[in-house]
Image (cartoon, rainbow, N blue to C red; front, side):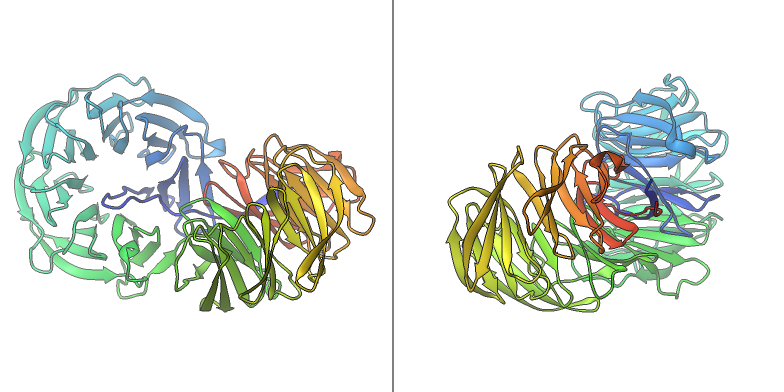
Length: 609
């Protein structure tokens, strides 16, 4: 059976104008963040060591380790909190419906017995504290009138809870059972984050009014603020204390992170400003941070995770990035099979190196959306939703010049002749456009609804699949297509067609969950009954020696078939990607790479039988 060898994780989901509250476990040096319905556990010491929890029914918003590191509580936009085990198979302990709206922050009590959660209550309570094993309430939280963005539990006795939110208020509660004690209105805008210092003596609030204010942890009185010299020039979205409680890290929409020294009297003085190299656009705004052991972690709006080192703040940060949205296509470069390119529809192309992981983004001059994506050795060809086909030359990690050609209607599928890549065929609703370079040499109306296409590597023939499940084989002569045969076997619209690398076979997959391998010369079925998916087949790939064919489907599975054996002796990877598999490629005979709706890329290794 294929085993999971590597996971290239997605990045945290972000939203413009809001902070995200990431957290971690100092003992194991892991961090938690969310993307879509997944909760990602990332090991800072080894970023390829990733675990993903996908049991939420709605998009997850926040996750926290319990104080002993054995449990994780994660919350989602429906107001549900799930408590599950950190290790072996993430077994579910409890599930509670806590608020009637989305949860923005949650914290464990230091003894691990209670959890406080805050968020949007849709007219009902905006904050709740409950026992972690029974879900019973421990207190009444009055005093907020709008969404509560953050809450914090005092890490030492006597216990206190502080909350802050969109009504500009910072509320202080004593307990348990918790009761309202006092409220502060020192901020003049949304209060985005509140955090107690590790010894519980102080807490700090940061706000969209660019200020940070420090309060006494026991009485809740204001004692000082972050110095207004060298202050942030934009909203401050998140704050995190150093383990010794003498410094804090803040991140802001002004694209900088700042380390402040906090004095005994409660005032803060700037120690260092950290800047990350980026594209210079809004994607560089910082929206989340975490200070854990020696690591200072910041997250930008574009999802890039930068890791600075507290022991040496001058050192350039380690940067990790990836996709935030559905990864719709994968390509492996022939010249360097360890190099994997993945693209998502929001226009991001990421380069990964097997065994190393993230190796940079390919920045195009025109960052348009991507629907179809193909790569030859020296160039990539993309099409989006604007009727244009782009040919972009590749120089190592950089994109060179880009040429575009408008084909007049929206491209549905695109295919390159790999041995002569200046020839490309593009299908639209019922037409095929032939390109040589960036010149449209012909547009041919086929008279049926086209859904999939493949061009032979030498550019001599093309196979076009229709909505009616028929495969039409055309001979390419000059700039015209001549129909040679029609193959009928599929019972649903064709979704993908691929030639084998040795050009002796081709495989096709349809929306009715069936795949078929055909012999190219005789045009007979070579492998039939490939009916083991339960939903539409999205993608298909051949191994380099043409002995294996892999299919990926909306049903989250990847199935690998051997061409010379019956289809029943298949290998199945169940649950390869939450939400469906959309991209597949082989890097060598035993490694298959998959990508999907969960924005992750995974490498699977099969042991030769």
